[in-house]
Image 1 (cartoon, rainbow, N blue to C red):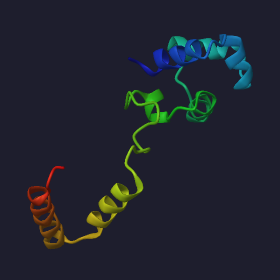
Image 2 (cartoon, one colour):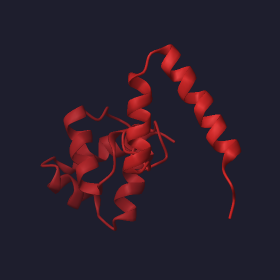
Image 3 (spheres, rainbow, N blue to C red):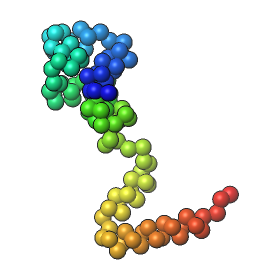
Image 4 (tube, one colour):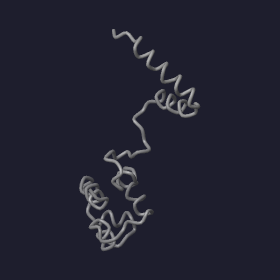
Length: 112
């Protein structure tokens, strides 16, 4: 799916007309239609504003992910994020020890 298709789908999902979106972007309707049809490349500043209108990420508009939140937003909770951040700061030996400890904890875990 191209980013032009995504832009159109987002507009249709929001029940907006091309004119309404063009007005929000301060564009002439013809120019917006060119973006949506793929006749013109969408400039970064316009893509950013489109993402803001629909509350989606640029990653989604660009087709890099199917998650509208994008690649940079995570579904990890605070503890999971802290673990990953700490793991990344470890040297190779520390990472190896951490992974070994993880395996031990998993095998010792008792299901209730």
